[in-house]
Length: 271
Image 1 (cartoon, rainbow, N blue to C red):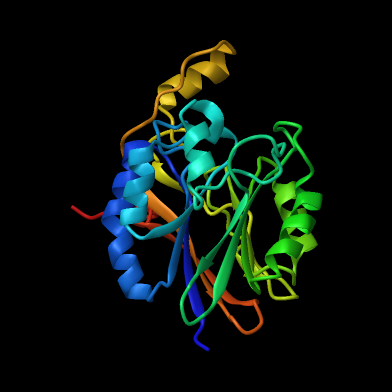
Image 2: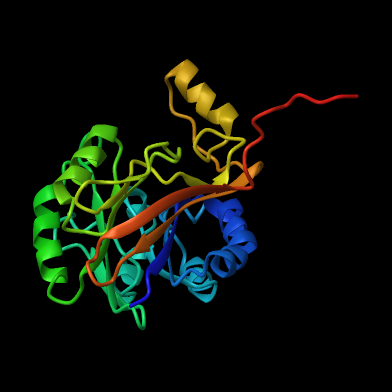
């Protein structure tokens, strides 16, 4: 049975982030023989939620499942979308009477069924249901149909993401952190075969403060008073991780990070 290759794209921020997906995704799929593309899209609509048109475009570009987080709720139209779109996820540990679903199962073809689970942390965030206990419930249900499971943990605290990675090691194929928009340098395979990274990073404008105009963000920090955030536009990059999963065991065999285009690390030059 062939290895399943999954590309997970980090938090897409606004039109610049969508442009990066349009630009880089087709060549990435071809270059790396990607079987499944997943993306976090909770910031696609000017930093807050995602529109129906944006979701459809991501699907047309080859994104099979769009995950999200706390900002998905900030546009009212999302209630209907979550209720009708099986592959647009909201965190599973929100109270169950909210619309939408927190996990889905997709057919990958020869490699079999892949489950995708979306969770949200609670440290420094809303006090919703426990992501650890919700993971227990969801993973048990998903294992009835799939050995391969990828978890998007959308959380603020590094420690909470790391704890969930260890908690699920050996039970899921990968635990991928989102939300903080800065790609971390800790991509690895945990001892029982679960791929892990604390944050996959942001797909969007890096001439910014985590995607928002830096002048406004600085005012908020300096003045300690409200100023309406606005998305930035420049220095756009795509951040992602590439996973290789053994369908026979559900364990990951590799995880690698990418940021395209690469950041400039040496500004020296000769005249």
